[in-house]
Length: 105
Image 1 (tube, one colour):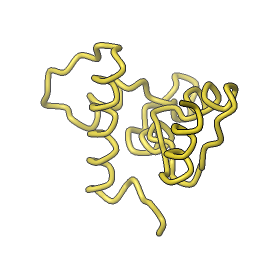
Image 2 (cartoon, rainbow, N blue to C red):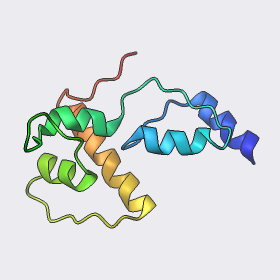
Image 3 (cartoon, one colour):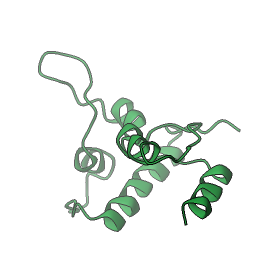
Image 4 (cartoon, rainbow, N blue to C red):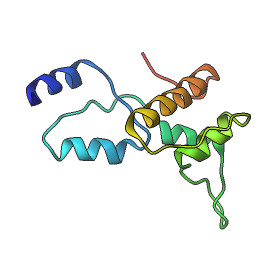
């Protein structure tokens, strides 16, 4: 099965909310991942501009990014893989529509 998964990874570009966590996990198990599009959390950091008390922008938790980008919703993060992935994709797509998340072609 690993070869089938790697074949998919070879074909598609991937991102995640905190790619270092997800990609390090996969790479520690021998997968090779193309890292050619931005991390959703890194882009959300610049989009949300949530300050640390002592200065500088923090990496927003997914819920913080959601609340910042979609302020008029009552979504509460469920911490379940599919739900997280769906909402993280919505954050990415909204930032893309706003011209914040850029993918070079």
